[in-house]
Length: 233
Image (cartoon, rainbow, N blue to C red; front, top):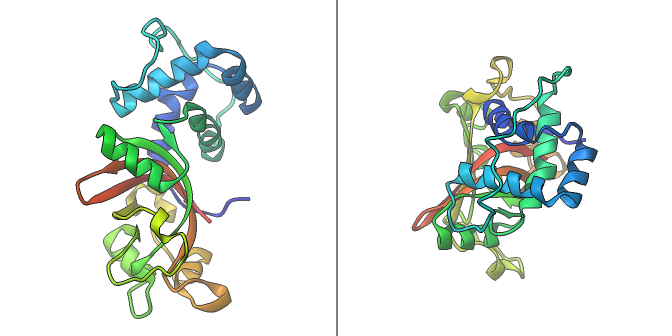
């Protein structure tokens, strides 16, 4: 079971309504079967995502449109976890150059195309607000943002695969105001705060925090920005 550090519920709801819901195929199993057995469904999905990313460099059939698909009114209200799960299952079906599961490849494509790409990555990030002596949860609550980054100046990475990683500054900023009102403060004692803050077995003191992030990535000249839909341990 995933422990969600952050969920951008409005963006998840919007992305789901503009894509998966329009496909009108209920259930994750049926959705996966449709993607693998009905090329027209995958083409419609790609057209929808290209439109959202405003890409024109990805080849898709002009004869396939999502405008003719009218979603049925569901008898069941899907939870945000279910909608996110459907998206995380479906978006990888898009493949390259729209979706990537590693940062270096996503960065190269975003820089080449000058378009956003979807990412679902498992990587280690810095959480500078939780370095020893920093404000931690109080800083997140005061500013309304959780800041994560990669290749932060002054941090030496001794891993053998260092050269394979992204050689640009990468940040992921989670906007705490998008959380449900009841969850818009990060208590000092929460599991998330402890994992990010503490040393040793309890946590990471803000360094090399292993996280999953699902969202979009935008590349600029000297840095890249990840807009997260969800972040989890």
